[in-house]
Length: 126
Image (tube, rainbow, N blue to C red; front, side):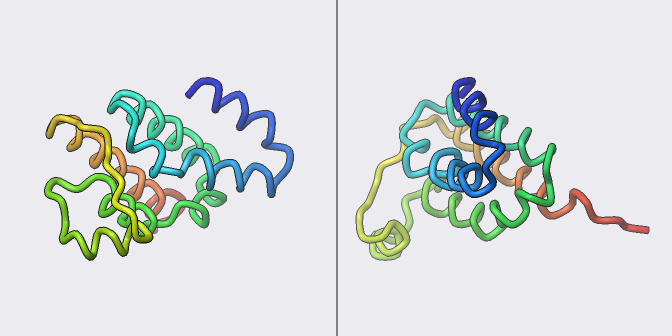
C-alpha cells in the first residue's frame, strides 16, 4: 500500500491519470477482496486518508452507491442468491478472501465509515 501511495503522489499532477489510477487500482475491489483482511484494512485506511485531504474531489469519484455496491458484491455475510450475485459480478462469481466474521465486520464498518465521511464532510448544519 505504501508503494501505491508513492505512485498516487507521482501521478497526482495529471488530473485524468490520477482519477483513472484511483478508479482502476485503489477502487478495484474485485482484486482487493482476494487479499488478506489486513491488506484490505490498510487500503481502506489509505483511501480514507485521501478522502479527508480532498473530500470534494473524491465525493464524485467514490459515491455512496458505489460503496453499497461494493458491500453487496464483495463483503456479504451470507452468499446472496447466485443469479443476482452473478448479474452483479458481470456473469462470473468471484470468491473473496476467506475472512473471519470479525474481520469481515471490521472491513464493512470501514466502508460504511467512508460512506459517512463522503456524505457528511463539507456540509454545514448551521
